[in-house]
Image (cartoon, rainbow, N blue to C red; front, side, top):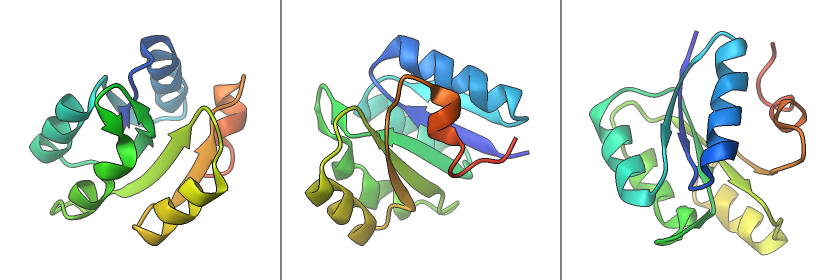
Length: 116
């Protein structure tokens, strides 16, 4: 069982994603903005961080280096509502484990990286 941090300003999406993560047997914590996300990531140990690109304060990609430097060194998966090949390339080069687009189905979105 892993511990997953979800950083996404869309409360409904974050809560739905957390519910799916919990059904898969993992612990899930949600943060709804960049500051809360970074503070939460620094205050606990996470195996995976699901990080939204489009946050009100700026691009979630700006948090990526800080999250990757944490002692727990969580894997970071970038999630976005609008795919951008340049953004995906930048995310992977900056240390993201994967870059996936939000879909109508959170289960479908999570299949590539999390087995039930």
